[in-house]
Length: 145
Image (cartoon, rainbow, N blue to C red; front, side, top):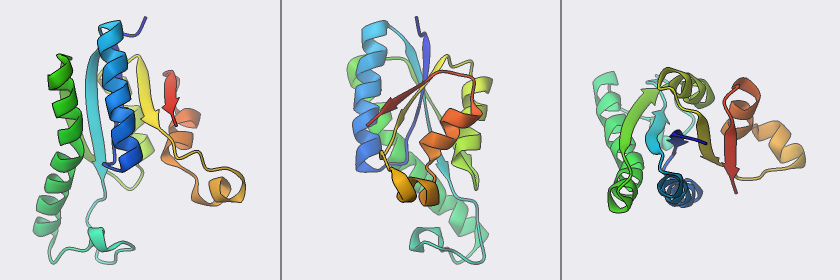
């Protein structure tokens, strides 16, 4: 069925739970994994404290540390399960675009992604990267809640 799974992670608790389940799924079906995380590009003005850096060079270093932390959970889970895994770190204003692009470029045949399950006005206002991935890819998406 599926031979190559893309598992995006943002390092959140929900995302980490999805990572463990995605790795288990990959092991059960004998698939390989591409893990990825997307960090924000440098801005002179930031909306979140995690996006603030003194210089662009420092921001790049900070985002590399963040990406390594986000991907370390996936890397360790895959190693422990004996699942082949490669890692991708991208920088973008729109993580869903990077997720869709990476899945296509890497030849993934499914995306295994967490969702916060927002509904109603919250979902309309906040959007959600999973929803955006669902509406912008032709690759099957397994949504983990």
